[in-house]
Image (cartoon, rainbow, N blue to C red):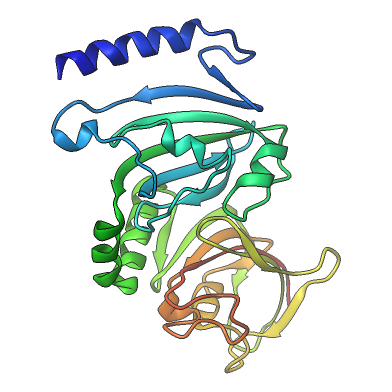
Length: 276
């Protein structure tokens, strides 16, 4: 154990002494830079490193150069790294390690988990590596996988991380801009703009640039239940971010189009543009 501490001490000294255009980051090549934030020593699991064929459990956040969160992965979904620049990041770490990577946008877009960013020249990737799983351990995990429970755990993590959300009829709501006038009520014609995305930040639906979505509030079957629950708490001009659990969105079947899978909480950025 003491040898591992000494080894990591010299690794950290080495990282900070490497030539890099970003202070404190090691240049890994190919527009990727690395900084180890913390590492674990206690327990046998802390010494486990990546082996070919492993699956990985990570918490991961991708931020632009303004530190805006644009993509997120939670630890509950196991992933098998591929042979590409992005997935090599996981192989740099041992279980329990936390690190920060800077990656060029072009490299990220060509290697990532299907998410494409157009936000900044370099992206910051914050990673906490929880555990590696071999094939047998992975099969045991998925055989006991409870999608409904995983959804609830993810929502709890969001509430823990972001204190700005409040519970409005089991829909999580974070007010970005206060509205004016009366709350939306049954029979009102509501005009709004929205961007719908998965919890990881990948968008799946939005209103057109110069066109609002219009509907009469309270009309059965016109919007998902979570929309109705949260809109009655909003006023004209209000902007909010909402997270709708699957039971108030597309449930255990997913959307009819197949875009939204079963047991998927979804997120909307909403703006009420007019009420009449």
